[in-house]
Image (cartoon, rainbow, N blue to C red; front, side, top):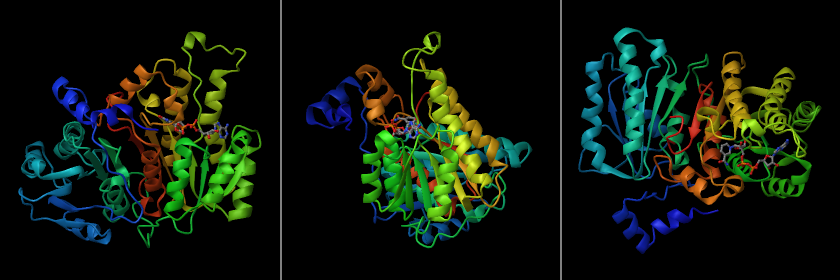
Length: 448
Ligand code: NAD
């Protein structure tokens, strides 16, 4: 499925009209190709704080070239600034001093990461300065252009050694459609990262469950987790059995056809994973449905109950399945649970009271479990914005156009962008990334 406006805007006549009429000009985003280096260029590192000394070593471990001797005449693919040393508002000028001379030295689709200390962990003037970083990064995300992304990563005291998997994601094209995000590392207990022997296959030897895996975003999640080395167990409804089976055969995976809202679905999934795979490492609750209607028209009708079906698939089923997998100890140590929320669950949307309630509930589910989980198990969620799929292709043209352009990148994302974000959260290197909700929305203006 292509973005016809983007195709037009990059044609010769399109370029002329875009320039002269001041229309949005979406940049073709670079995306990760298996086997390519994580970063195709050099990353400039600056700032003085808890991480300044270790950052070059972390990047070297990821085979990412970096330099601390910045030169405004050079070209950089990424910038990383350690702001953990900023303890008062007058010191924030260090951001300007580092970034301003380099803003014209950035390559296409550049990556910017600012590292801070979670404000809730410090007090007084330091807390103020650390909180200020959020406004800086979110604004830079909106002005960087050229397909660039900007993120803030709050690293808790003691979690300095757990940063590699997050930098591997945020500095690479894997995070093409993730921008303006605030990620917390080590905020919920675990501050150490699991071993990753090979960054090209971080999920080698792991088992991943993906619901709704036969098409759309779920299919891409299955493909990316397989690329990263996992054995994927796909779940989908019996009506999607043939698509599911052919995909899982292609990926050397396994499948289970059932309706996740079925009474015995949690037990069947738990039994299957335990008996056939000895457990599961990554659980992705992707299956979801919409049944849009304004609330005034939401009463059950001949087409069924729009409210109950949406909440049952999107929220109650993930809750019940997770509970069963935890109670039966089917999720292995250091495993991860990943929910799929939505921008609708953050900003709200006309005609989607049912859907938005279910998706905000997914965020509540993350909040409720993040502190409760043990054995190194984590829970996080992704919140996709406008992703180009069969679901959004059905949206009327004008609404779709507005939906696609209302973000800092002036375009919709691809299913693979959601999948890459999930692969990062599911990596054994991300055991200190817990309790986060990461938007995959090109920094959408809604609910910002
Ligand atoms: P999709 O409709 O293309 O795919 C959903 C899959 O879930 C289908 O294969 C479907 O058969 C399966 N499924 C539905 N009900 C099921 C059930 N009861 N049991 C088992 N499987 C079931 O949708 P998509 O666009 O790929 O969306 C995937 C997820 O991403 C959903 O949770 C959706 O809410 C969320 N999301 C999508 C977008 C977007 O722009 N496409 C935006 C935000 C969030």
